[in-house]
Length: 98
Figure 1 (cartoon, helix red, strand yellow):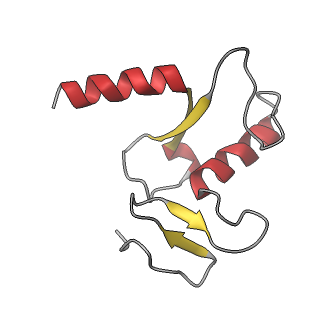
Figure 2 (cartoon, one colour):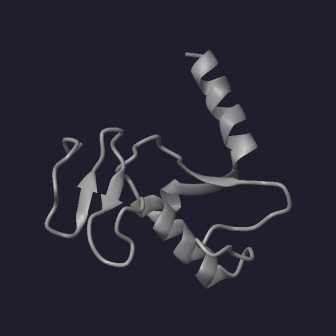
């Protein structure tokens, strides 16, 4: 894992929580995993997207989960788009059972 605050040559940095974040370009300040899932949604046409590129579903908010819990593993197969309510319930159960 990379140390937080390290600015990488490819236009990313790792924040204090361990997530990659863009430091340059049109995605500056955005999380890499969220941009990747947004691009996947655009390619696959799963959902209608809002102006920020997030899926629109009546009364719901979405979040991106790292399946293996490694925040720096941004492989498409490791990213799961979930409704926030479902993500929070799974996280709570996981935390509770530790």
